[in-house]
Image (cartoon, rainbow, N blue to C red; front, side, top):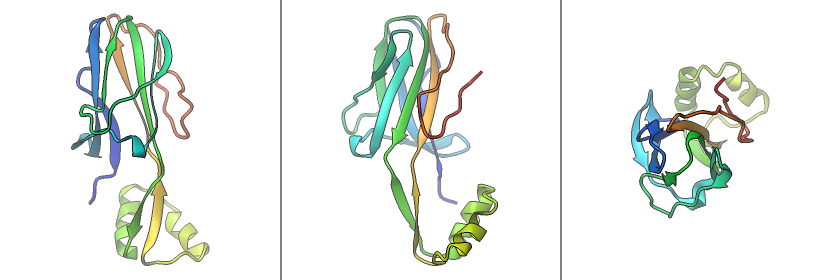
Length: 155
């Protein structure tokens, strides 16, 4: 099975005030994956929401870790990244069936067929929406919505 999960992986989930928050982009499965570099051409939005407000992060193309900035103020920092739309082609129906079974996407195959879409050489479009939380000092604060199309907010 090809890797399909994408996440922000902080090198440390808790740092002292004045320290760097560094985080990788990772792609894999079950939190085992490959480190990815930042590339602006595939990024729609990369932000940090913290005690000092919401700010864009602007790494350079090729940066690894993808996120690297100094956190001066104690509190909870919410890292958020949205990608631009990407796509991949499924050459066979069988390969796509394995993917939708693995992801437990019930009803997708029936919807695909009812729309008269092809069973070979068809494209899937997707975007990624990921977040991570990092405590600076006491880590006081709480998760918040960042306005992503798909988003979990920790309670």
